[in-house]
Length: 553
Image: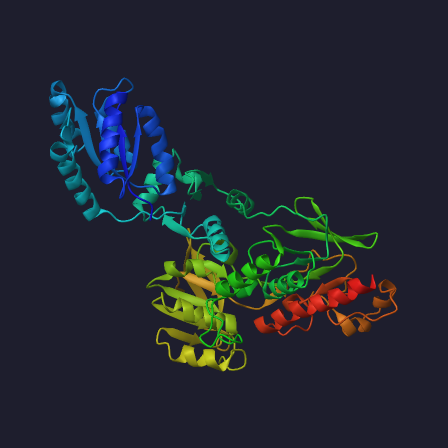
């Protein structure tokens, strides 16, 4: 934690030097001593200090200053730092003003000038005030602060982005947190400008986009190579593995991600069947380890950027980004994974991000404390989410169309769910409507066998109803399956149009698409196993085929 601040203000330079010297000599090790001869300058700096998480323990202000009186300064200053102690420096003729200030600004003490010797007239007073301040002080969070409405889709997107990128932040609900209202007031902001992101340097962004945040935090990387050996599109487990192996084997490697690294696996609260981690690990932990490893080995990471197209010119692949920029590469590995399928039910679109979430949405779990929460889906992702949410919610209800979970969920998860008293599995049940005002309040459920309906109070709904590949952007005649997954290797031979586009004498490599030098790995590939370990294996395997392709070019 940074040191609390003692702030001294006096327009008389000689007095200011004296008070600063005495404070620094006695309190300089435990407190940061700041001083200025301008009350207006001091006020201007207070808002930035508050935004950045600095803490002022004590104001010491002269009463007679040309810009404003000390009492007037303290009245304005305590609106920004209401917990700070307040001391007025006065001459004998100003004692009446000082006594009046005790009531006007809850003045804690007034000091007569001069205060020599400080061991008798200054330090005992200041030390008592600082002891009292410490007794009631709660440490301020030093870092990024996000203020907004709990059930705001815009706030959810920002929380999800910060959480997925392992960027520490603190959430302030404008409807429940007085500090949030104070932050808006002192910065001259209103509720219509929410969400607002406050940074450690004292600046803020109102209604920021993900690109705005990335640029502010310096996450967006500038390209350092004119031509790359391999560009990997998508930073899920397959893409991360490909970037690690590509960089470690000396390839000029670029990894491009449209949101945040980790993909669906990155949002998982607990992966318990990953080799080498007997106690399991979170998706964010696995992602953080992988991205750090890739960067250490020399891979470049470009995010958030969406790839709009891949074109081929003169034997090179041109990767076209959303901002129109072109990245030139000798080969490409597509690892864009899958998106959750949308639940086409009345009210779901209205409350998406406001009580209804696709995937685990770990950042919203704390808002489910002591509430009724519903999870749709019978796969491992749904089971892992239910287990995590059970730590917060009063009750978690798992909705499935089948009789039970045995056909779709791993045995270890079924056992854990059965041993968790506040998780209920509701078989043969579907959601047919979501209701609420500003956020989700109720769900209308139906029994698929009896057609009986019921209305249940619900504070949150997490949806895991299968996935569709993120391949709509993929063109170039790359062959896809009926489900829009990318076909690779020997399976391409079953398509009539394959030979019209494939002109090489050799057959495609195992993970190669119908366009030579473009590979696919992980969940985006037709026939993939949809497991983290298999995605990691395919990502690393893709690099071995990249080497073979580059050797023949």
